[in-house]
Image (tube, rainbow, N blue to C red; front, top):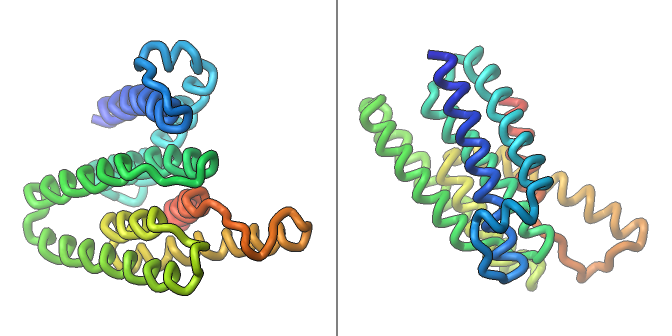
Length: 220
């Protein structure tokens, strides 16, 4: 059974790497490029991303197996991490978070909630309620920050934290948010001290959410 899990994660990592670079090129460069052409043009970075996805998937498989976390939860965590890396790279380049990717993540979470219903029906309602509360609180907190920051935080960040809350519930959301905001504050202060940015400058939030998510997994 463990061999099958490794094979599944290897295949998924390779496929996701190809589609990630395809989506990034079409979104960032605003070009209609076919998937084979995208991979051919960026084969080096596609291979690097594929290896990174694969390493994380294997580490997650080994670590989560020791923690006796179900394969369903494990797969969900890996898919979210891969997608967050793509969102972070795009936000870093163009300071925009693609709505399409957020919608895909919402759909992924819904699918896994349905699968949870069949795997653990007794836990479905508490998990669903926790997810919806996390989603609402994530959106509400960032909405307040958005209104107070006068443009320093965007609507994409609001939607991103709502998705994070939908995946992890209130407790997980707060922890990831704390890591993300702490890391972004350190970078922002450093940029100000070294005069690489001004008080009104904005920095993309998704890379720090990705790092916060990674910290959350590591400390899980």
